[in-house]
Every structure is written in structure tokens, then in C-alpha cells.
Image 1: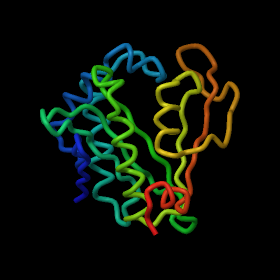
Image 2: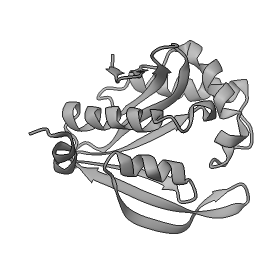
Image 3: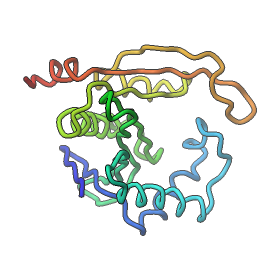
Length: 184
């Protein structure tokens, strides 16, 4: 069982009951802006959480998507994780999402930093990358704050709500992460 603690957050394994909080924030129009979804039902919330519960049982485990819980309040405010894409290549990617009510407080950066540590220090990955919609400037700032560099710009790569959007690829290598965190 994976549990990560930061100054303000606890990143823990998903539990069945988490679907309500997930469905609630995924229904917010601000959240939906960069997703193809137009709404999120109870069934969607349950299926989303079930996907993460199922991944906890995989052996070898390749997806470590964790519930992000605000430590002081105990509220689930999003999720963040690392997926091992190529075990032989020691490569993975990260992803995160937060309840829009908690945007702008540094929580995504804090969670992404913890997940990078999991990927590099615990899982032994060499390269971790992330993809985001180019218009999502807040997400690009998070990726840059955790030391990732932009490697690619894919024009009209994602079809979202009837329009083509560009996607950006960011990445960081293990030795770059170690240098940033003073780890040898």
C-alpha cells in the first residue's frame, strides 16, 4: 500500500467511497474545460475510482494513481500518480487533477513533486514525462516548477469539445531530478 506525505497533503490509495468526491469535482465546469467529457455521472465517478482500485491489484503494478487528500481537513481534493509505461526502459508518465476549488494554492505542484519522488526513488525510473493541453497554462507551470522541461508541441493533437487543441510534452530525467533535490 502506497502512502505519500507532504507538508500539507496525504497521497493515498483510492478507496471505493472516494467516488463521490471525484464525481463532484469532475462535474465542475472549470474542471471539464480541458476534457472531452461534458458532464460526469455517478456511474462515471464510480468507474473512474474502480479503474484505480483495479490497478492496485495488478502484478507487477504499473499504475500508481493516488487520491490527494488535504491533510488538515481530510478532504479528497484530487488525484495524482505515475504510470510505468516501459519497465525495461524505466520510463513512466505522471498525471494529476484537482478540484477547482483548490486550484492556485500549490497543491498540484506539491503532489506532483511527491509522485516524481515515488517514480525515481522508489520505482527506479529513468525518465518521467507528462502531457497537457497547451492552453492549460496552470498545468504547464506545475510541470515547470517540478523541474520538467518541454520536449514537444503537438499541433491540433486533441479533439476537445468540438475543437482541435495543441498538446505539450514535458519530461525530466532521473539525474536531473536528483540534482534538483540534492540526492546523490
